[in-house]
Image 1 (cartoon, rainbow, N blue to C red):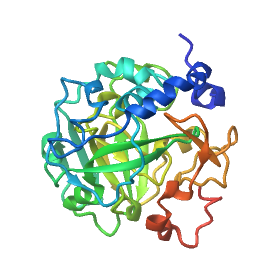
Image 2: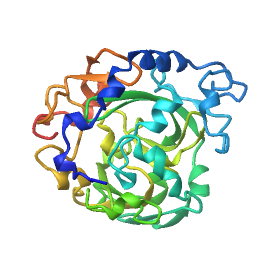
Image 3: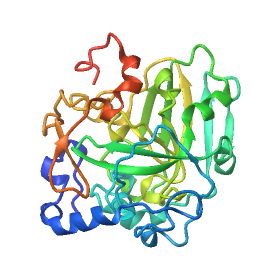
Length: 321
């Protein structure tokens, strides 16, 4: 099997031609994405898409509705779980859905360290209970110019971080993904430097929109979407939303995140959705929502500018991309 390095990928590698041409399939998927009224308080039991979910997955109930949610039409469970970027399981969009069954999300623990008063190791069962879980319907915008609308489950990342009492020296938070070639066979290939590393400025990490993702579509997080714990940062490109987190560090200096290390001329640290700055190999001014045939205009900060633009007052967003 030929494995391409990220720097070698072309725009044509992103969306297969045969998928794009199946307009009828797209329309059918879009029609099936309507969400019904649920008996479990989440809005899924009556949905035509509910039957497509994993019957063996743990269901999450009594979820709080978030005022931050968009009212846009959801993408189907099939879209969300079969079209993914997760290079630890392969470079093709379908690879994570095919191969992520090797990941074992239980038992799981996260090491918290660095500039904080209460470092330690925390088990996923405890992390799930830190704050009431809520449904947040967020847009996801990927740098390859495709997007989705996903019903994430989790709670604000700030609720998790503040328990460790970060000190005044903590200016950034660094996150690292699991490294285990048996569980993540894509790590046997040099597509990226493993482990996957991401980072946020403290004010970004503590912003109420930043979500500690623990599930989607009414169930625990599927493996291919970053089980059991990931970030969801809706105003940034999808590569900032690191998956399968095992380590969190409070640090004084800006972390060198994976994609900036891989190709700094194409990927910056902040990764805010900015349609005025094109990727060198494709436009960022428009996007294709999975389930739709026509492209749509990309929104500044992915449409979350009213909430987050103040974080970047005085910054040149063409320079700090």
